[in-house]
Length: 251
Image (cartoon, rainbow, N blue to C red):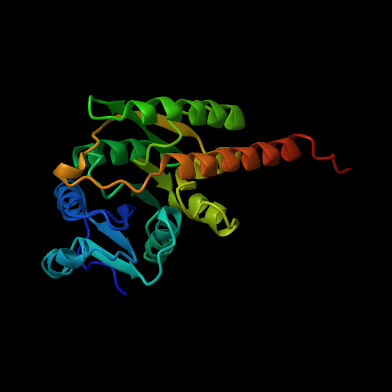
């Protein structure tokens, strides 16, 4: 498993995890390649054939690096696979974006430029919603934002938006040290634990669009199941925070 031979950046790589994201995957990858190289796509054991066109593209495009996971593990697991591979090749930062087309590729250069100017910080996307955003999801994420700010005492603009630039080493260290952050809980728990680690936060506005199924949009979010998981995650994080606050001093 070798990365592309030709790269534009030796420090920042675009990381796109994907599981059954349909035709939007190829559109997302080609859009990202127009704005930045290299791009690393981690296919999390997809079964819908959405990754098939990428093999031919990778043969023609030296800026595209593909990794296929044999078993589906969730978004966080796919990200961790990408982190390990990218760090082994000397990359220091990853821009993580979703594969479903919600995050415009045109945002990539601005996010990476801000990261280059603030290499110790994580650059969090602050979503600018349009009329396509489901109102229930927009309202529901407000509670997660409040809890993330409570848990971190940091200026968290949005705890769930997936377009971000992370310093690679601290993110990988936090994920390797935990059995969590492997599924939908990745985005929120990663930023909370990196804040606890002392990684600064910078918020950057970014457009977001939700595509209907007729437009090729695919969503694996399930309101009941995933909101319960987020609730359990925040309860666990708050418990960890209390233990950190009231841990006895050692002399």
